[in-house]
Structures are given as C-alpha cells and as structure tokens.
View: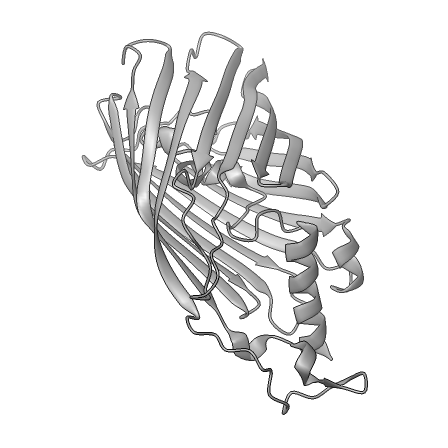
Length: 329
C-alpha cells in the first residue's frame, strides 16, 4: 500500500506540476546553490579565492521511498574578472526516476572589476543523465477485475531505460556590492536546457526537454548596524509549468562574534510554506529549512513536507580567513 502511494505521488507530482519541473531538481534554498541558480554567478564574489556549496533535500519521507536531492559545486574567482567551476546535482524520485546533472560552469564579469557592482554573463556545459526503473511502475495490463497484480506482465517494453544527453545553459546576473550603501539590489536571468535535448527513455518516442526560464531578484538591505533583511523572489517557467517563490530572509549579527543568526520565511505558490533558520560565519554559512506542504499531495504524504540542509564555504589559497561581505547571498 505504501509503495502504491509512492507511485501515486510520483504520478500526481509529474502531472500536476507540483514538484515543479520533474526533470530538474528544485531547492527551497535556491540562493545557497548559486552555480545551479545561474551560471553567471560562478566566481562572482569578493574577498575569497574559491567557494564550495553542498545541498541535501529529502522530501515526503512518509512514502516508502522519499524524493532525495543532493548537490555539490566548487568554483574559483579569478581577480573578479573570471569565474570557473564544476557542479553536479542528483535528483531521485522515489527510486522510480533518477536525473543526474554534471557540468562545467564559467562566467565573465563585463563590468570594471574595481566597480561597486558586477554585471556578469555565464554558461554551463554539461551532461544530463536520466534513468527510469520500469520495475517500479504500474501498468493497465496488471489490473485484473479492478485489483492490481504485480505478477501479471505489463505488456510494455523499455527498449532503453536510461540515456545521456548534452546540456547547455546560459545566464546574465547583476549585483550591487557597495558596502557604503544600505540597499544593494541584485537580479539575474537564466535559460536552462537551451538545446532542448531529447529526454525520452523509449527508442520509439521523442520527447524534447523544454527550456526552463528563470528570473530571480531581490535586495540586501541594512536596516541597522549588523542587521540585514533580504526580500527575494523567483519565477521559473518550463513548458506549461511555472513556479513562483517570494520571501524574506534576515541576518542578525551576534555581538562580539563573527557569527550572524539567519531566519526567514517564504511561500512557493500553491505548493509550500518554507521556514528557514541558520548560522552565518565570516566565511561560511549553514542553513536548515522545512517545507510545510499545502498542495493536494499532502493527502498522500501524511502532510509531511521536505527537510533541506545547505553549507556554503568561502576560502583563500593563502589560508587566511577573510570576511566575505558583499555577496548578495
């Protein structure tokens, strides 16, 4: 019964679009994975030589198999002019479908490196791997008098249960980095899967992966010494599906320490309310969030949502710790 609920949840998620872009992993803490948010953000930070990010998301744990997303990225800043890096994301949909993305990211700062802002363009070149486990699927032929029988043949033949595809994405990003101003806006636009690769796992069927358009904007606002609020929004569209996020994060400096407390809340339209807490160091950040499911899928998941954890670390090749102050994230 639990396995049937899992498959119903997967089917509803894909058909209703409530997981928003079943082909791509989605994160509630999307700003903590800048390389996958927009390749133009690769290496675009100050007072550090490299950055490492890691994200883990576990969704709907009440099912027999949860939806699990893991991601890792590493990028290097070269004199505030160039950024290069590697990123990978794995998205497992309850053991029924799995998508793996691996690629190289590059960005170029077209503005003056000494300016109090950056305007960058970037590109992601990589591979996309998709696999479907047909042993976990239910077929019409396996129902007899209204009852499901897994021993009955499905009558379906998966001639190709997996495939690799080339993948290209591109973007442009703007960030104000003027520490003397109390308001520093940021915004970016990206296009993913611009080559619309054929993602079908059936040799007899062609299914082009639609381009995903992404727009993200917000501002880092200093309301008092050591206290920042960050209103932020995200809009994505892929084919007929769309996702809208809006929320507010805040950072509150802990007196006498290099730490700041991070709290925030956001809403993903018709999907989830997201609560976030974290701790930010001078050159590192740790954040935890929980999605409170408000979509129709809550009836199949015992109203369980998603847990998510992220780590960001900025470092220097010299080993010196330098405070990263002007990153929009």
